[in-house]
Image 1 (cartoon, one colour):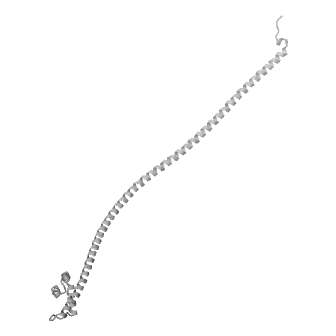
Image 2 (tube, helix red, strand yellow):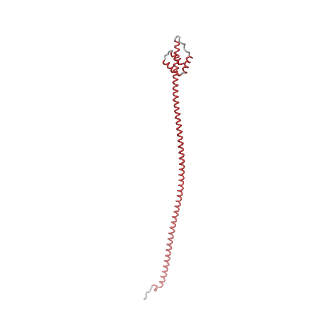
Image 3 (cartoon, rainbow, N blue to C red):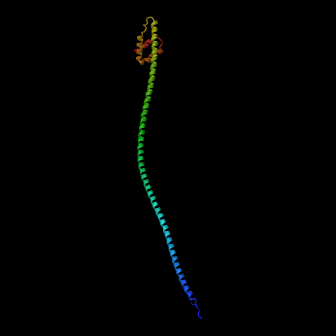
Amino acid sequence: MASLTLEDMMPEIGAVFAVQEASLLSCMAAMTTSIARAEDEARQKVSAAEIQALRTKVRDAMDYVNEAKKTMTRLERAQEALAAEIDLLKRDGVEKDRQIEALQGAMADAATGHNEQLDELDKKFEYISKVKMEQKDVLKRLEKQEQVANDMRYGLSMLSKSINDEGAGEHGAPAPMSMDSKLEVIASVMRQPSRLSAVADVITNTPDTPAQEQALVAANR
């Protein structure tokens, strides 16, 4: 007896299995397509996220580059300003050096002028000192001459008194001198200061005798 298959025994079940198999295959194909589509969408989503991330990174990098360019521009401008300021300072330094040299020259000229003025003042001071010394010497000589004149006046007065006393006490002696004669003798003696010392010595060293009159007459000659 030949063996029978399930399809031979139950032909309806085979048709059902065939339909189910076709449906299963169709479902598997649909599932495969869905999976492939899901994979593609997932890959696309990942790629989009990566692209967006890359775009963000590129944008950030461009922002950094732009900021770096701005910073470089500011640094270049600052460097240019610093170079200009250095040049200005150099020019100012040269001008200041010239001004300093001019001031030093003016100070040297002023110092020379001051030294000349000091020398002139020293000379004037020396001259004034000499004049003062001469003035002191003149004053001393005047005081000495005044003292000698006072001594002469006193000596002449004593001489005149002695002559008058002798004329009044001796017989045959000349008459006493008048006041005019006395004044004339005194004036004559005062007009000849070079003989004052001789007369003063005669008056001092000679006693009150008629010799004093002779000395006075000799002094007036």
